[in-house]
Figure: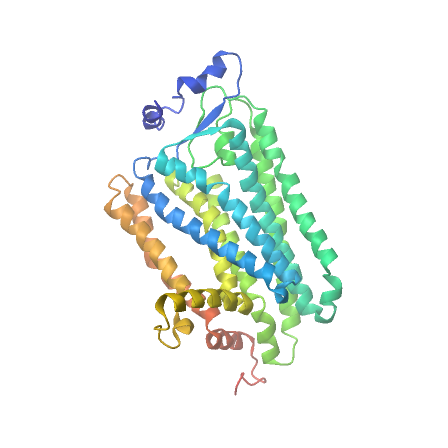
Length: 424
C-alpha cells in the first residue's frame, strides 16, 4: 500500500493510505502519522544516497564524542572557549541524531511513517539545535573579542559563572524562539495530504500540507530566520571588526599573527555552519526553479556537514585535542602493527583529506554506476562537486594544518612595509 501510494504521490499528493485517512472520516483533522517520501524523484535509488550520509553521520558521531571526551578529561581545556566548544559538540550530536536514524530507515528499510507528535518533536529539535548552534558561535566570537581586545581581563570577565549564564541564555533563546513553530502548526487542520515530500519533518514542508491559512506560520519562520540569524551574523561580524582593529594596531607582526591564529578555527566553523545554511534557506524560500531533489539534498547536507567538519577543524587546530587524539590512534596503531610504521608517519598522515575524498568518490560513483534513475542534472551536479570540493578544501586544510603555510599567509596579510617579515 505504501509503495503504490508513494509511486503516485508525485502526480497526486493526496494519495493517502486508508489507515492514515481514517481520522478524517471520524471528524478529526489531525492524522495519526505522516509519510516521509525521502528524496522525491529518487525513491528507487535513494538507498545509495544513504551510504555517504551514513558515513558522514558516523564521522560526526565519533568526532564530536572524541572532542567532548578530550575537553572533559583534559584540565588545560577547562576554559571559556572550550566550554563553548563542548556545547557546540553536544548541539551537533543532537542536530544530526534527531534526523539521521529516521532518514536512514526511510532510505534503507522503507519505514516512511512517522507519528504525528514525533514529527513535530523532530521539527523542534532540528530548528532549535540550529538556533542554539548559531548562538554558541556568537558566544565564541565574544570570547575571542575579550581574549584579544582585553587579554588581561579575560579571566575576570568570562568567569565560570558568566560562561554558565551565557550558555543558559543561548539555550533558552533557542528553545523559546523555536517553540511556537510546532505549536502553531499543530493547531492547523490537515485535510487529506499527509505525505511530506522531504526526508525529515522540515517546517515549511509540513506547513504546505495544512488546509488552512498558513500566513502566520510562514511569516514567523521567515522572521526567525532573518531576524535572529541576521542579528547573530551581525554580532559575529561586529566582533571581528573590533578584533581586526585591535590586531592591526599591534606594533609587532609576530603578535598580530599569534592573535589572528587563535581565531582561525572559529572562522572556519562559522563558514561551515552559515554557508550551507544560507544556500539551503535561499533555495527553499526563493529558488522555485531549483529541482526538488536539490532542495532536499542541500537540506540534508546542512544537517550533516557542520557536525562532521566541526570536530575535524578543531581537532586539527587545537594542539591539545590533536595531541590526545593522535596519541590514542598512535597507541592503537602501534599495538596493531607492532612498531612497523615508518618514522614520521603521524606527521604526514592527513585523514581528513582521505575522508572527504572517499565520501565524494563514493557518492559520485554509486549514483553514476548504480543509479540509472537518478536525474541527469543531479548526476552532473555531483560530478561537478567532486571536481571542485577537493581543490577548494585542500589548500584550506593544509593552510590550517601546516604552520609554515599559515604563518606565511598571515604574514603577507598583516605586514607593513616598515615592519620586517617574521624570521627575516
